[in-house]
Length: 271
Ligand SMILES: C[S@@+](CC[C@H](N)C(=O)[O-])C[C@H]1O[C@@H](n2cnc3c(N)ncnc32)[C@H](O)[C@@H]1O
Image 1 (spheres, rainbow, N blue to C red):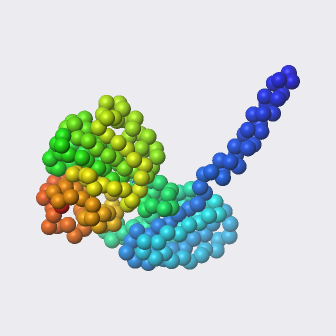
Image 2 (image 1 turned 45 degrees about the vertical axis):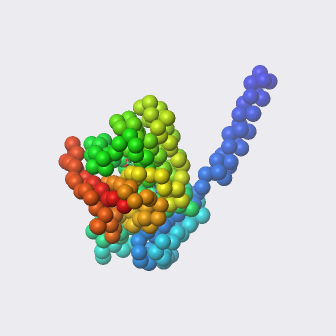
Image 3 (image 1 turned 90 degrees about the horizontal axis):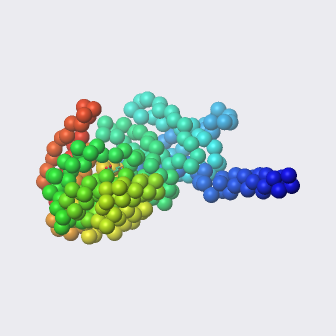
């Protein structure tokens, strides 16, 4: 009886201690980044308190942090319409101009404040992966880097199909865990490596093929890095979005329609 009492007491102390510890270790900040080229005006109010809202401005490329640990309601104008969202603690959000030039806010795939969230996590359909590799003429002697690799599928399929060595880089630890597990399942662990890194800070100079499935403005941000680091002749394959100002480097373009009727575009460039 006494033993059971002490076990219960011990467990309760553990639970009691783990709650504040969990709160302390998990970031409750809300991060909003402006990836557009202009100042964005928006208003913010806390979802639990007074209806008063605060007007805010975010310069191009800047980051705003809200550390109160509460949800927030954000409103901003896009093409004459007021858009309102709830923002949750521990999450990162990014303003971007979509392909129609409308201002939108997307929920990022990681909540790191020291690195831009270049795209939410959406994987490339397998038929599109196959086509990207075919268009880039990937072979066994290539070294393929997927910048923002998600579940690692592009790197893994290239290794499996052509024996290509590859590196996948992502900032989301879940994605890196998945990538390593899939590589093991596919039996290509010796050919591939997955790195938990911000692609903006990665060394990609050994890549002979780079694959991207990000967003147009993220491609634009990455372009100087590709220009600086890649060797002459390296191929860059981008799913859905072109590389701004690289028309002269374009060596291939195609469209792939998937089973759900959605059309995907693929752009291939050569440095
Ligand atoms: C649209 S998904 C593409 C996944 C994969 N390349 C594919 O085509 O299936 C974009 C990925 O980029 C990652 N990402 C976003 N910003 C990043 C950054 N600064 N550094 C590394 N990865 C990033 C996201 O976590 C996400 O997994």
